[in-house]
Length: 261
Image (tube, rainbow, N blue to C red; front, side, top):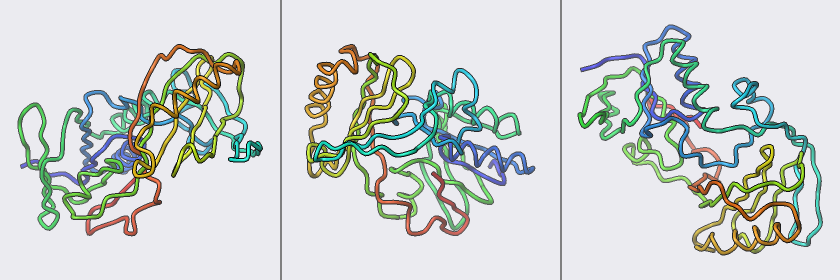
C-alpha cells in the first residue's frame, strides 16, 4: 500500500495550489484528478480577480485585463462598479498551477478516480489505468468540486448549485468590462458576457427547479446581442456545468479531511 503525507483529490486551482504549497513545505504529496487533461473541459466564465493573478501574468494564460462590471438590472437600468481583474484561459491557468505543484515535488495522476474512502483508517482507493490502488494518507484535501465524491463518501449533504450553459462567440467591439444581466428570464441566477480579446464568453446560470431550459434563454440573449452589433453569430465553443451558489459548507473539515475551493 502506498503511504504519503497528503492526498489531494481534484486539480482545479484550489487543489493544485494546496498540492504545491504542501510539496514546497517538504510533504510527500499525491494529487489525483478524474479528467484526462487538467483544466478541460472549461466550465466557468474565465474571470479571476487581481489577487488570484500570480499564475496569470503571461501568455497563454492571460487574455485581457478587466476594469469593472456593468450590471443590467431587471428594470433595464445599468449599474457600473469597479471590479478589476483578468480574463484568462482557464485550462492553461489550471495547468500552470499543476505544473508548479509538480515542480515542487508533488506527484500528479490524471484520469484517476476516487472509488472508495475509509476516513477512520485514512485509506482512499484510487482507480487508475484500470487498476485500483489503496492509498494511506495522513491528511486529505477534497478539491473535487460541487459534486464532491469525497463529500459523498463522508455522507455530507450536496451543495446547492445552479446549472450553466455558455457559448464562446466573436466580439464585434472592444469591451473592457464584464456585463451581468439580472432578470426574471434567468430565475435563481443571471446571464453574463465576459470579454476575452476578440471573443467573449456568453452564458447564463439558472435554478433548474425554476427553469429547466437553458438553451432557449441563451439563444434569445445571443440573438439580441447580434442585433445590437455586440457579438457575432458564430459559436466556437459550447460548455456548461454546475456551480455552487449557497456559500461554503458549514464545516470545511472532517477529521483529517479539508475541503478546498
